[in-house]
Amino acid sequence: MKNMNENYHIPVLYNEVLDNLITNKDGIYIDCTLGGGGHSEGILKSISEMGKLISIDQDENAINFSKKRLEKYQSKWSVYKNNFENLDVPLYMGGIDKVDGILMDIGVSSEQLDDAYRGFSYKYDSRLDMRMDQNNSLSAYDVVNNYSEEQLSKIIFEYGEERHARKIAKLICFERKKNKIETTLQLVAIIKRAYTERSSKHPAKKTFQAIRMEVNRELEVLEIAIKKGVDLLKPGGRIAVITFHSLEDRLVKNLFRDLASTCNCPPGLPICVCGVIPKIKLITKKPIIPQDEELKNNNRAHSSKLRIAERI
Image 1: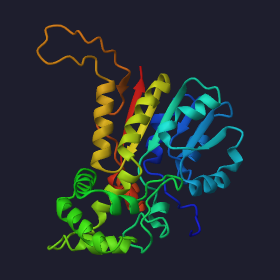
Image 2 (image 1 turned 120 degrees about the vertical axis):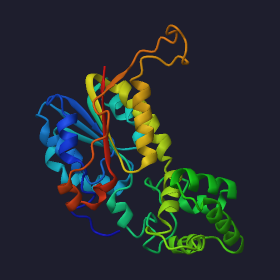
Image 3 (image 1 turned 45 degrees about the horizontal axis):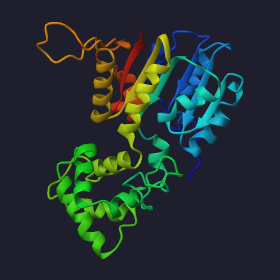
Image 4 (image 1 turned 180 degrees about the vertical axis):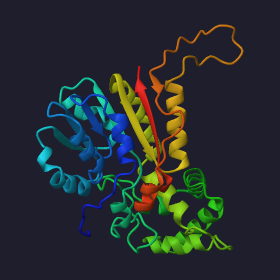
């Protein structure tokens, strides 16, 4: 594992998050995706000594790094190793009922992508892995070598939005009959064969994204976490979600819309019979995106979008 530094996962939309999330300086907050601790540190700087921050991450490396970085805040900060779909667990353990704000910064950190040993990147040769939590049983190796051609095609198309999904899945299944596909660069070589034309982006980018999302159940976890998170908020408390590609953003947009809806009745009914009561109001009807200055200084920020909702 390579050395980490202060640039570990530079937090995107840093000021925008803090300006919109911190409504009570004496309140309780959750950072569901600790990473390198950038957003957590910002929250800790913004809240008073009466306030409290709970951070969650499933990556042991991220937790160990942030424990050193945020050591001086230990009187008002605690950290838990868990998947953020279980964000209610540390609250239950701490005897906390409701919180004032929740942050979710979705996706893989720069550190994970750049770590050649983790198998997230198509740039380095390593064993296929892609597990954010090293204790998980399912890895990229299992997906690539054990999923059916139909399953592979489906996840590569849906999660990667890859138009060559069927061809890539067919090539993977053909090659693994001869020998197991063990490494990232073996997989890259197979994917490249599905591209007869030049591509502006790396041919393996979308397939690697799709496999990573399958291994870590990313969309499923995000939906569970948002629904739980909204129920954990105090009235006036806020949930902020940063996404990095269209599938995630669409999920957050639709979930927020549904949770803010006053009626789920079929169109055409003269009166509402469903009795749905909205749980949130939208603070951002359109997502907040980075300013030019941030885009200049942090390449990772380019596709980021921030959506915020407030508990009613």
